[in-house]
Image (cartoon, rainbow, N blue to C red; front, side, top):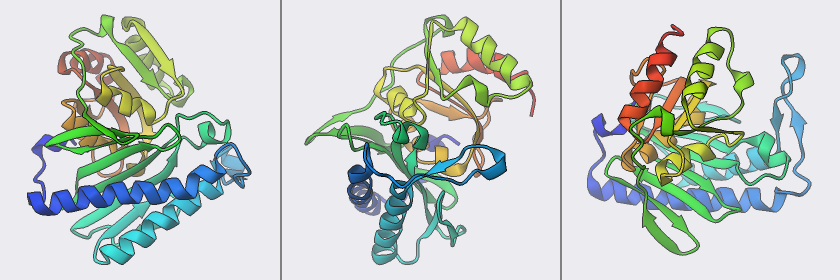
Length: 275
């Protein structure tokens, strides 16, 4: 699901929604930052399925975001990791992951992010990747993306990487890949120059910023990826599934790259995994 092929709202409304997205990030940061490296109220919601942490930061930030959306745009829908769906078939739908990388959050590592995406007529058109502890907000749409940091703004642009052999790649953890997926990951890793692990969605921001070339993930939910699609597109990059097709509405296996040639080379290995 690459945003360049997506119809955008009119320019005035898009600018209004963009400014509102900055407000939403401010509200999320206000709820999250007092709990980072502090008493964050950790709960394991995984049970027998395995460790799946959630904190008061996750829940408080999503409540704050939802409340603002309800006040400003009561006809908009919301899909959130913590509180589920509300009008998911509306013309405009916000897709929220208040703290992506909760494991990093509880470890005190500043690579967690707040992901906020907006769908228009079912497709992601506007998104942000926020890291408020570092004072960074990566935000954009198909018309352009930018980094807002400590009062300054600069455009985001992916970097050229015509060969996987020169690529710096990333994934959250190779253990997430199961069965044949492991073969695909190993083939991509073996061909790449360098791999970095454990950055969650912060790695997506680094593709947009031109410091990472390729990110491979699997079993993502919509809230894990929707926000990144417009940011990557606006920086000149690409987001597909492992076969090179547009992403559906429910996440899945994803590949994010700044250079189409690098992406295509990686997809040769990944597409052999099958569906």
